Length: 155
Image: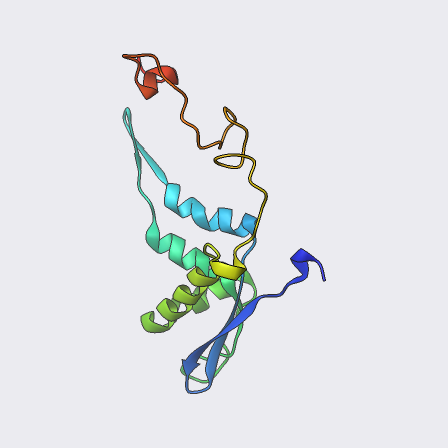
């Protein structure tokens, strides 16, 4: 079985026979989810980073849900397709159910621990050669030069 052939789906029990199946999301999906954390707002000459945590959480749930058997007040299935219906269905969930699903989705799509953590060869302090991006090595700066000045960002 290939690395990408794993179908890691986890069932979340929501009580009274109701459940939601969640899956691990892909790197591309996670990039889309994570965009909510780096939202920028420009006001004149100032740029502020204003993370949208609510958007991040909702996007994580949207991307993670694989299937469910949830129904509305008339016992009609809450649709997951097309995407616009999935958004509406998730928006109708009680907060406790949304949070339970989100907690499991966050756990499934976070850093691996113990035996589940991927093992990769280490090419140095940060996995790259010294001086390369991501090496984890901070270059020496001449006395009196700050980090922004060294990067050419100061005026």
